[in-house]
Image 1 (cartoon, helix red, strand yellow):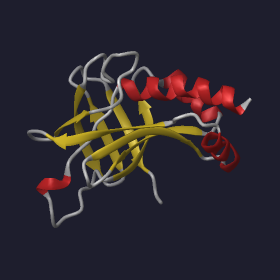
Image 2 (cartoon, helix red, strand yellow):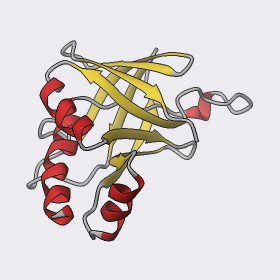
Image 3 (cartoon, helix red, strand yellow):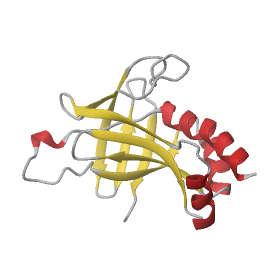
Length: 156
Protein backbone atom coordinates (compact mmCIF):
# COMPACT_ATOMS: atom_id res chain seq x y z
CA UNK A 1 0.00 0.00 0.00
CA UNK A 2 2.85 2.36 0.80
CA UNK A 3 4.41 1.73 -2.61
CA UNK A 4 1.10 2.71 -4.25
CA UNK A 5 1.04 5.87 -2.13
CA UNK A 6 4.63 6.60 -3.12
CA UNK A 7 3.82 6.38 -6.84
CA UNK A 8 0.79 8.65 -6.39
CA UNK A 9 2.87 11.08 -4.36
CA UNK A 10 5.50 11.29 -7.09
CA UNK A 11 2.91 12.79 -9.40
CA UNK A 12 1.82 15.27 -6.72
CA UNK A 13 5.32 16.14 -5.57
CA UNK A 14 6.80 16.83 -8.96
CA UNK A 15 3.61 18.59 -10.05
CA UNK A 16 4.04 21.01 -7.15
CA UNK A 17 7.74 21.35 -7.89
CA UNK A 18 7.10 22.04 -11.58
CA UNK A 19 4.84 24.93 -10.68
CA UNK A 20 7.82 27.03 -9.62
CA UNK A 21 11.32 26.52 -8.28
CA UNK A 22 14.38 28.70 -7.71
CA UNK A 23 17.99 28.57 -6.67
CA UNK A 24 21.09 30.70 -6.09
CA UNK A 25 24.86 30.57 -6.19
CA UNK A 26 27.18 31.51 -3.34
CA UNK A 27 30.24 32.20 -5.51
CA UNK A 28 29.69 35.95 -5.09
CA UNK A 29 29.95 35.71 -1.29
CA UNK A 30 32.96 33.48 -0.58
CA UNK A 31 33.45 34.65 3.01
CA UNK A 32 29.78 34.96 3.93
CA UNK A 33 27.30 32.13 4.15
CA UNK A 34 24.76 32.39 1.36
CA UNK A 35 21.33 32.68 3.02
CA UNK A 36 19.83 30.51 0.27
CA UNK A 37 21.97 27.46 1.06
CA UNK A 38 19.94 24.94 3.04
CA UNK A 39 16.71 22.99 2.85
CA UNK A 40 13.41 24.82 2.29
CA UNK A 41 9.85 23.51 2.59
CA UNK A 42 7.17 24.80 0.20
CA UNK A 43 4.38 26.16 2.42
CA UNK A 44 2.11 27.83 -0.14
CA UNK A 45 1.79 28.80 -3.76
CA UNK A 46 -0.77 29.80 -6.32
CA UNK A 47 -2.53 26.79 -7.81
CA UNK A 48 -1.17 24.15 -5.43
CA UNK A 49 -3.66 24.42 -2.56
CA UNK A 50 -5.45 21.13 -3.30
CA UNK A 51 -2.22 19.18 -3.80
CA UNK A 52 -0.81 20.74 -0.61
CA UNK A 53 -3.87 19.60 1.39
CA UNK A 54 -3.41 16.05 0.11
CA UNK A 55 0.28 16.04 1.00
CA UNK A 56 -0.39 17.60 4.43
CA UNK A 57 -2.94 14.87 5.19
CA UNK A 58 -0.20 12.30 4.60
CA UNK A 59 2.38 14.34 6.57
CA UNK A 60 4.41 14.76 3.38
CA UNK A 61 6.08 17.96 2.27
CA UNK A 62 7.92 19.12 -0.85
CA UNK A 63 11.39 20.53 -0.27
CA UNK A 64 14.01 22.37 -2.25
CA UNK A 65 17.60 22.09 -1.07
CA UNK A 66 20.35 24.43 -2.23
CA UNK A 67 23.94 23.36 -1.69
CA UNK A 68 27.04 25.54 -1.64
CA UNK A 69 28.50 23.62 -4.59
CA UNK A 70 25.80 24.87 -6.99
CA UNK A 71 23.53 21.82 -6.82
CA UNK A 72 19.81 22.00 -6.08
CA UNK A 73 17.49 19.12 -5.19
CA UNK A 74 13.71 18.93 -5.25
CA UNK A 75 11.92 16.13 -3.51
CA UNK A 76 9.54 14.92 -0.87
CA UNK A 77 9.90 13.75 2.70
CA UNK A 78 7.51 12.85 5.47
CA UNK A 79 7.38 14.19 9.00
CA UNK A 80 6.01 10.76 10.02
CA UNK A 81 9.07 8.55 10.74
CA UNK A 82 7.26 5.36 9.71
CA UNK A 83 6.09 6.85 6.42
CA UNK A 84 9.58 8.28 5.76
CA UNK A 85 11.09 4.84 6.35
CA UNK A 86 8.54 3.37 3.93
CA UNK A 87 9.47 6.06 1.37
CA UNK A 88 13.12 5.15 1.64
CA UNK A 89 12.53 1.39 1.37
CA UNK A 90 10.00 1.66 -1.48
CA UNK A 91 12.64 2.03 -4.17
CA UNK A 92 10.78 5.06 -5.57
CA UNK A 93 12.95 8.04 -6.47
CA UNK A 94 11.55 11.00 -4.53
CA UNK A 95 14.37 13.46 -5.20
CA UNK A 96 15.73 15.04 -8.39
CA UNK A 97 18.96 17.03 -8.61
CA UNK A 98 20.01 19.85 -10.92
CA UNK A 99 22.21 22.94 -10.86
CA UNK A 100 21.64 26.58 -9.96
CA UNK A 101 23.36 29.91 -10.49
CA UNK A 102 22.75 33.54 -9.67
CA UNK A 103 21.89 35.87 -12.51
CA UNK A 104 21.63 39.65 -12.54
CA UNK A 105 20.06 41.18 -9.41
CA UNK A 106 18.02 38.70 -7.38
CA UNK A 107 17.20 36.46 -10.35
CA UNK A 108 18.19 32.82 -10.26
CA UNK A 109 18.49 30.17 -12.97
CA UNK A 110 18.15 26.44 -12.41
CA UNK A 111 18.92 23.77 -14.96
CA UNK A 112 20.09 20.20 -15.58
CA UNK A 113 17.11 18.43 -14.02
CA UNK A 114 16.19 15.08 -15.60
CA UNK A 115 13.79 15.42 -18.51
CA UNK A 116 10.13 14.54 -17.86
CA UNK A 117 8.58 12.54 -20.71
CA UNK A 118 11.41 13.74 -22.97
CA UNK A 119 10.79 17.40 -22.14
CA UNK A 120 12.60 19.85 -19.94
CA UNK A 121 11.58 20.15 -16.29
CA UNK A 122 10.47 23.80 -16.60
CA UNK A 123 7.25 23.75 -18.60
CA UNK A 124 9.04 21.82 -21.32
CA UNK A 125 12.21 23.93 -21.19
CA UNK A 126 15.66 22.92 -19.93
CA UNK A 127 16.14 26.03 -17.74
CA UNK A 128 13.96 28.06 -15.44
CA UNK A 129 14.42 31.46 -13.84
CA UNK A 130 12.82 33.05 -10.82
CA UNK A 131 13.28 35.95 -8.45
CA UNK A 132 14.22 35.04 -4.88
CA UNK A 133 13.63 37.12 -1.78
CA UNK A 134 14.85 35.86 1.61
CA UNK A 135 13.88 37.30 4.98
CA UNK A 136 15.44 35.23 7.75
CA UNK A 137 13.95 31.75 7.54
CA UNK A 138 11.30 32.73 4.98
CA UNK A 139 11.74 32.76 1.22
CA UNK A 140 9.52 34.00 -1.59
CA UNK A 141 10.08 32.78 -5.12
CA UNK A 142 8.37 34.53 -8.04
CA UNK A 143 8.60 33.28 -11.61
CA UNK A 144 8.54 35.58 -14.67
CA UNK A 145 4.78 35.01 -15.05
CA UNK A 146 4.15 36.27 -11.51
CA UNK A 147 3.50 32.88 -9.88
CA UNK A 148 4.66 33.15 -6.27
CA UNK A 149 5.64 30.46 -3.78
CA UNK A 150 6.37 30.81 -0.07
CA UNK A 151 8.93 28.59 1.59
CA UNK A 152 10.23 28.11 5.11
CA UNK A 153 13.74 26.99 6.07
CA UNK A 154 13.82 23.49 7.55
CA UNK A 155 15.92 23.20 10.67
CA UNK A 156 18.33 20.30 10.99
